[in-house]
Length: 357
Image (cartoon, rainbow, N blue to C red; front, top):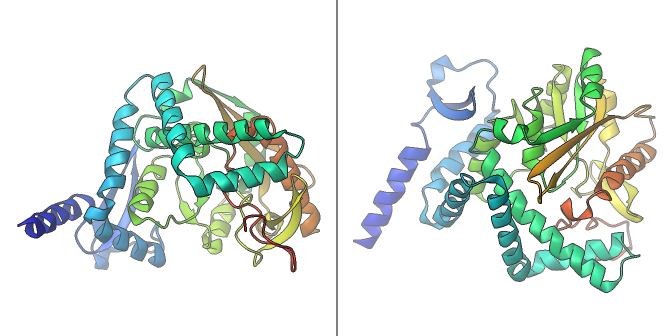
C-alpha cells in the first residue's frame, strides 16, 4: 500500500510539474514562466533552449516527482511563504538559516576558514572567525532573497534599491554593441540581477546545479527576470547573446580548472581565472563591472555599475589580473557578502599543494 501511495504521489507531482511529451519551450509571460508543450512539427527554428538543455529539463522533470526530492521542494515552499512577511522579518529568518548552516555545514565552514585565512592575513584569529560566521549569515539571507525573486514581484524590492552608475551602462549600450556585465559571486547573487532587470533586459550565464530538483526551480525562477539562461559551457550561446547586442551577466571569479583559464593573483594568492578578455575581444562587447550589496538592518540594496576602460589589452594574464583587482576591490567593501564557501584556489600550478587538503 505504501509503495502504491508513493507511486501515485510521484505520478501526480510529475503531471503537475512536467508537461506531456513534446518539445518544451520556456516562454516569458510577465512576472512568471510557464513550460508549454510544443508539437514536434511546430517547433520554432531557434528554440530558447538548445537540445542538450531540453534533455536536461526532461530529465529534471522526471526526477522532480521522486520522493527523495520532496524535502528540497518543501523547504523552498516554506521559504516562499516566509517571503510574504515584511522584508526585515524574512531577512532575519535568513540569518537564522545561516546560523544553522554555520553549525552543520562543516566542510563548507572549513573551506571558508581557509579562504579567509589566505585572503585576509592581517586579521587575527577572532576577526577571521567572526568573518566566517557573518559570511554564513549572508548565505542564509541569500537563500531567502532567491526564494523571493523566484516567486514574488521584484518591483516591491526595486523601490528599496539604489542603482549607481546606470548612466555608464546606458552609454555602453548606446555604442550599438553587446555589453558584458562582469559580476562576481556576491551574496546577493540572484537578487542583484533581478533588481537590475527592472531597468534593462539581460541574459545570464550560470552553472548547472547537480540536484535536478533545485536546477529546475532555479531555471524557472531566473527566467522571470532573465531573457536567456546560458549554461557556462555553452560558449556559442554566450557569444550569440553578445553579438545580438544584448546585455550578458557573467561572473569569472570561480575556479573552473585551467582549460579556459590563466593564473592571476587574487587577494595575493595565485588563482585560476577565466580568460574573460577572450570573450570581449571575440564579440567586441563593452565590459561593465557590476556589484551589489545589501543593508540588512535597513532592508535595502545597492547596485554599482562601472565601465572598464582600455580592456582588453591582448595580454590575457594582465587582463585577468586587472579584473581580479577590480572584483577584489568590490569584495573589500563588504567582505562578509562574498561566497567564501567556494574552493577558489583548488587549481594550483604544477607542484603547488592544495590549501584545502
